[in-house]
Length: 73
Image 1: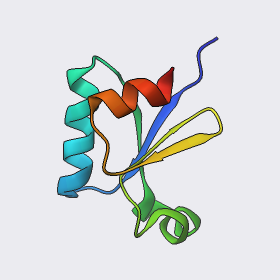
Image 2: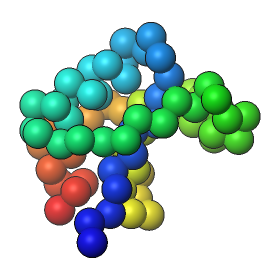
Image 3: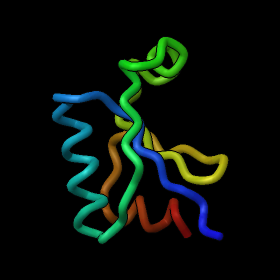
C-alpha cells in the first residue's frame, strides 16, 4: 500500500498553485488539505504553505520537480 501524498495550502494561494503545477508536471496526484478549515493546521502551517507531506516527512516551499522526486524516493 502506497502512502498518501498531502499538499497543505489554502484556496487562492499563488504559491500553492505553483506547487500543484509542479506535482501535475510530474503526474503526481496529491490530496489538497486546506489549512483554513482547521485552526490547528492553520497555526502549524500558516506561514509555511505550501507544504508537501509524505509518510512522516515534509517538504516546504520552494521546491521544484527535482526536489519533489528526491523527496518521494
